[in-house]
Amino acid sequence: MTTKKNLSQCIKIRPLTLDDYEAALNWSMDDTFCLANGWELNRSPEELYKWWLKCINNVAEDFIRMGIQFNDRLVGYADLACMKGNTAELGIAIGENRLWGKGIGFNSALCMMAFATKKLGITTFNAETHEANVRSRKMLEKIGFKEISRVGSEKYFGMNSQLIQYELNL
Image (cartoon, rainbow, N blue to C red; front, top):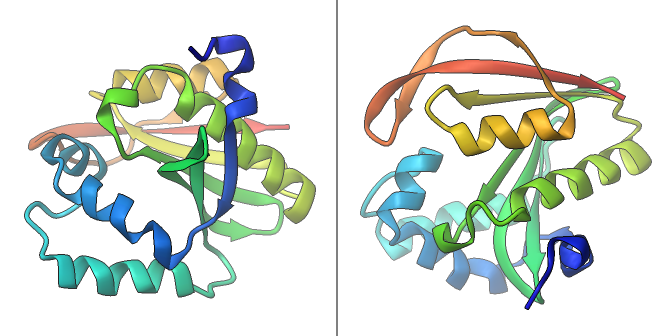
């Protein structure tokens, strides 16, 4: 059994590969995951495969998506988006909803932020979540993010939800 103390040792951030497609396919069949993360419901495996190829072959100057590996298997992904200078937007998605609320997202966010700071010189992190996503809000606040605004809204679990913007300066 993994304790919270050694949970961070079981999590790694790594590049995504084509071999990770099966995990993404499984996530795409989980309506709870899709509704929470803005994924289209009932995607065809072919369309998802094309999308996954774009994810792993993405070469953008302002976006990085890495896999979250927990106990040697892919369980989600972490993003750095809108990277400019020393600033980036952090995003975390845990693919298996049975793993939600166990500290994996929290530790993955810390790993991705450490990577971004060490390798890319990022010192200001932005994040955005839905008001209704209490777990995400608590995770961001536990890391030290501060709410800076409430601008916009979008669907979260099929219902319109206020968006909350956060910032953390290291």
